[in-house]
Image 1 (cartoon, helix red, strand yellow):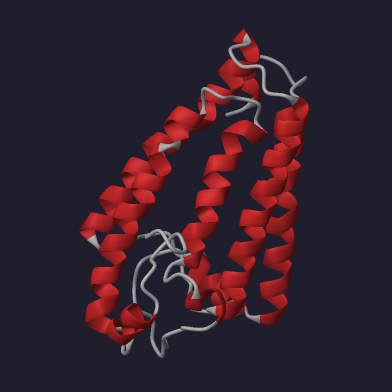
Image 2 (image 1 turned 45 degrees about the horizontal axis):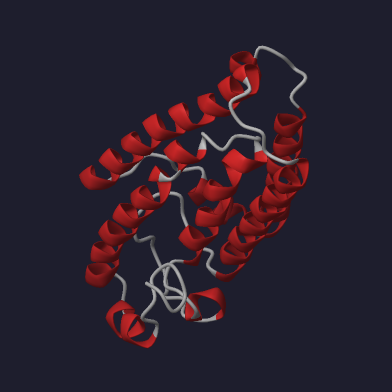
Length: 201
């Protein structure tokens, strides 16, 4: 997805990005394999039960496919000239987003990959969840918006800008389920009014 469109392995931004992506993934998997393997099992569930969520996931797959092709093409044809310092900064923001995701996993062991209510699931309202109602999506915003710059492409920002829209649709549909089936969620919404971005929305 990165090197074939680029037509070369001489693409240092991609190598740095892959290191920034896979190193924390390895750490997180090792940590939860030791401390909470049930959490990992829930994270490995990919099949959404809700029809609306399946549509959202299908749309995101198309966007991701396009978004990850553009940086390589950008590298091949030299469309962008992203300063090295900005590339490194974007990788740092990417890692920050992943660190916040890890914090969410630690604070909410029911943070599954799919939108559903698990058996014995309890409401979490402390930690990052006291700031926004969907801190994992907030962390993903940092991740998605940092990726194109980390890969050295301004043009890849265009498809990646669709991801916040996808997140909002997913979030709003998820809240309908939480309102219906998660005890205490309505009261929690009044206590924590911001869904995604503190003091904004």
